Length: 279
Ligand SMILES: O=C(O)CCC(=O)C(=O)O
Ligand SMILES: [Fe+2]
Image 1 (cartoon, rainbow, N blue to C red):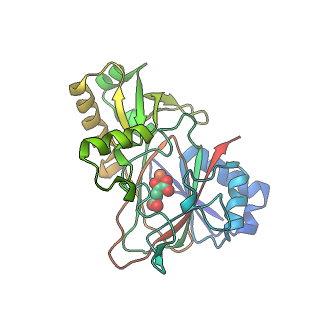
Image 2: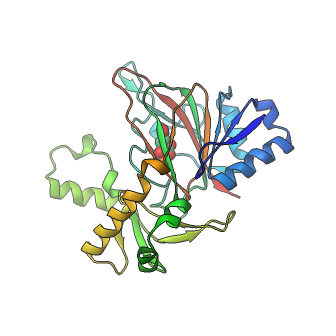
């Protein structure tokens, strides 16, 4: 087995390891430790079944089934099928999961702790996943902003990215907004948190998921969002995961910002996602 840093600021890549190797506590311990220290790990080309993906996730925590049963794997409710494939006129999964910068589940009171994504059928020239380290973003915030956000909370929501469906046809935009907001989650969290493993401070929340920042007016909020977006999307501080077949990518939900990029027309992309609550 080989473990190397993917970038200076996030991620470790693990190569030359099999599912059987990962059953050995000393090997799994190294991988788990790399995940906690580096926020993100990539295990290249790991040929595992859905049961084995769930079993690996269970070594760290309890799987949390995806909230919408429609996109759960038909035999394994722990797995969300994230896919653009349509079979017999039926989508086999949910398309365009996380196609904007976010931290998983931040609009929930108790977000999942880790996400395990397995590249079951992945294109190699598009459909990459971008990652940034929320601790690194905090470190790069100008002091003026660090003191502005210190001690503040923010309201997170999924309302900005709720999908329009058949049930919304015929509504006016104002009615649509009211219906979406009535169904959406709104949850308050501190803007700056500390990672239990590394002890590093990190920024919690992205513009796409933040409804308001307590004590900042519209102008202050926009200025913070612009500052935050600039830091998150700085190309020098983004790791682009270019999928190769059967990669297993695992990240800490709170401390990684990530975004899925578009899939080229005509290409298939299916990934299996298991998210877990920490023990
Ligand atoms: O499919 C991807 O590249 C990542 C999607 C995402 O944000 C997630 O699964 O949490
Ligand atoms: Fe995500």
